[in-house]
Amino acid sequence: MRILLFLFSFFILGNASSQSWPNKPLHYIVPFPPGAFNDTLARTVAAELPKAIGQPVLVENRPGGNTLIGTEAAARSAADGYTLFGAALPFSVVQSLYKTSFDVTRDFAPITLAGVTPNLLVANPKVPVSTVGELLAYARTNPGKLNYASTGNGSSNHLSFELFKAMTRTSITHIPYKGSAPAVTDLLAGQVDMMFDNTPNVLPQVRAGKLKAIAVSSKTRSPLAPEVPTVDEAGVPGYDVTVWFGILTVAGTPRDIVQRLNAEIVKILGSPEVRERFGKAGVEVVAGTPEHFSAFLKSEVARWAKVVQDAGIKAD
Image (cartoon, rainbow, N blue to C red):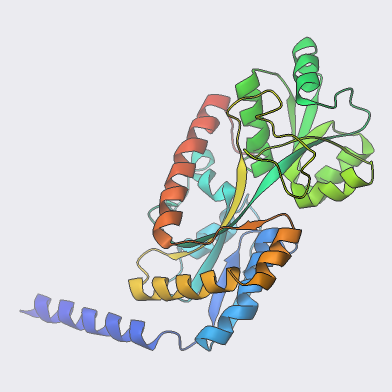
C-alpha cells in the first residue's frame, strides 16, 4: 500500500510540475565558445523563445575538453524542462573517442534537428593541387608529404578528412588545433596545406584569393559556392559529410514539455527572417520532430563509430 501511495504521489507531483512549466528561466548550454554557429543558434532561440513561454532563456557557453565539459554539465541536469543543450556533429562521435559518464542516445532527449551545412575543402595557394583528382594523384605519389589542419580529434573537419583518407587510401598528416581561427590563420600563412572547414568560415578567404576551394563535403553543391564541385562528383563516389546542429534536453523530461519546446523552436527556425539569416551564413534550416532527430542521431552515432574504428582515431 505504501508503495502504491508513493507511486501515486510521484505521478501527481510530476504531472503538476509539468503543468506549471515554465515558472523560472531556462538554461541553454553550448559546449563551444561564443562566435561559432552553435552559439548563434542558441542566441537566436534565447531571443525568441521567451516571447512564447514567458520566461527568459540564458545561454551558457561551456567550452573545453572537446565539448565534454558542456555535455557532461547538460547530462547531469535535472529532467525538468529547464535545460536545453546545443549539439553538433561531434556530439555523435564523443563516445567513440572517450569514456564518458553519459550516453548520447540514452541520457538526452532530442527536441529538433536545427540546421545543416557542408564543409569546404580548401588549400593554401602554394599547394600544387587545385582539384580532388590532382590532390589524389599528388598524395599517392608523395605519401605523408601533405598535411591538413583540424580543430581537434572528433571535430567535423577532422572526421571529414579522415573519411576522405579512408575512402581514397591516401596518407595525409593530421595537424590538430584548438579552434578554427588559429587553424585558418596557419593555413593562410602556409604553415599547413589544407583543411575542411565550415563553408562560412573560409569562403571569404576563397573569394579574396587567399585560399583555393577544392570541393564541398556534402552530397550536393553549396548554394554559397555553386561553382565548387562536391567531393563525390570530383572523384570519390559516395563521399558525403554534412555538418549538423540540433537542440536537445535531458532524458526523462516530461513528454508534453518536449513537445511544447519542439513546437515553439520549430516555429522560430521556420520564420522567413531566421531562414534568410541562417542561409546567408551557409546553414540550411531543417527543423523537424523529436522522433526524426532521434533516428538521425542514432544513425550518425553508428556511422562515425565505424569511421573512428576503421581510421584508428584516438582522443587528443
